[in-house]
Length: 353
Length: 286
Image 1: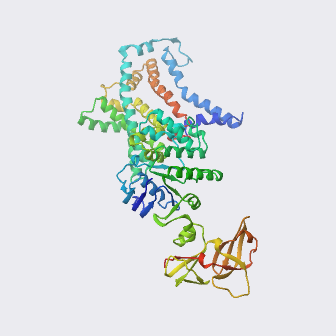
Image 2: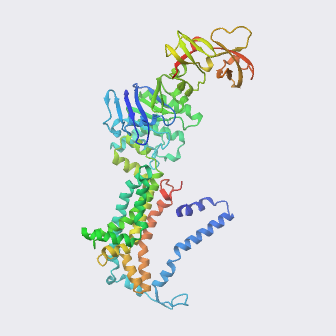
Image 3: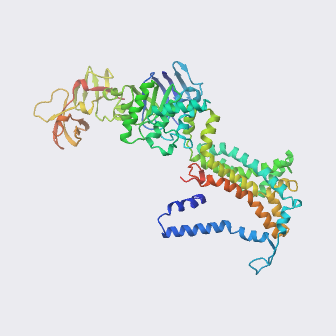
């Protein structure tokens, strides 16, 4: 149970023009699962390695439960990393891999043997201690790597894209396993990923980074309901963004005015966003448009069984709409439609001038 | 790409019977074996020959006198072997000790002036050994290193080390240090990490590098003569002296003794040369 706090954490590499990690302020709450999310090269792995003690920060502070760990070497820090590849030491048996950390502490063979079997049971691979890593499947190897990390009862568990290398059907198993163990042991867990879906399904809290800078740190649903910026919204797959200006709860754009009580700004230039499934799709009508409505036509649509996904053109905008199950096949390509954007589902983000 | 690859791959993949490629591969293997073993046959014959003149396919008279000479303590063969080992073994160990960090730096990191460093490491092997040794000798006289075993070791090291460094640079360019980082976070200190993680991973390549270093030192003649001529008598000096004296049978017998340790080393190392391990560097199978 360790709270990890990063204060103005910065890392400059000699080769880079801008910092790889730039004044990062983050708290990883004790016993929770946190995701460090971002495209490759955003500094998330660098951050993880600084927490582990593999890289020294250029500036800033890292504390575990309030005490600085900058002078604590990697092997004593108790922040254990599990990588998605190069998982296991190939020339050791599975048991020797899992028992590696205890061997480094000069524990007795009997103790190691018992603890190894205990850890293999925890990751649901009992009795495989004498196998070679090569004899195991990718998913099994990852579980062994997890067991090898957990045997030291780490303060912090650091995972590198824990699900990315696995087949779809194994992902669910691995997710369940990691979540189950994490809850059972209560270890503060941080994982890095470029996959927002992986972050959403696994994390209690997501920190999204671009170019070494933190853009939003929030619970997963917040990234859909109130993204901090257009870039954040688009990273989470939401293309429904309208530019305009905001004042007094009213958002004015080229496509009309919208009542939008929820906003990150009080007034000025902003971007309006709404989740694809929050938009209501109706037939075009001769009636005058009410507030928070706009007209468009269907560019394309995909029927997905439980729902349908439409691309709607409205002026120079393209909006994405996901319909409810009962309204899957109402509209064909080229049909004129009327969109209703419920005020309580709208969110106004700041827009850089 | 390499001999080791060439030797191991066809056998594994030619289970499709007698195809044209299979036949060509077989023929190539036989040729290669002949090319490697061939030169030893006349040498072996020569070492037992008393008289062997031009048109004869085999000597008219056989004799053991060359081998008797080699075995005679007066011929100083055993001390020469010991001298050669006394030089080649430290040269091998020092080369390996230098090649691990140097190869790591060259193979794993990018830095300013890397090409220049690579060139400077190779430079003593581009310039003729005679020139290099003559230059070094003048320096060694100043430090009292001429005519000493240590001096010979140092001059051999120049040649051996550069090959070893290049092999290890190849090994480390295929090497991923993340396994070390994992070991560190699991509580291994730097020494433990090297011993349990780095060393087993680079071992096959290290054996190849050591093999090169050993053979290059074992083979040195000119540099040994220049630095310690008359004081340090290695086996290669003995071989060249016999050849210069026109004693063909003795030269042949000494030559066979001369390749002995090299072949022994090769046999010990062969496990790593053909092994499945992926980090065998220049000789790896990836």
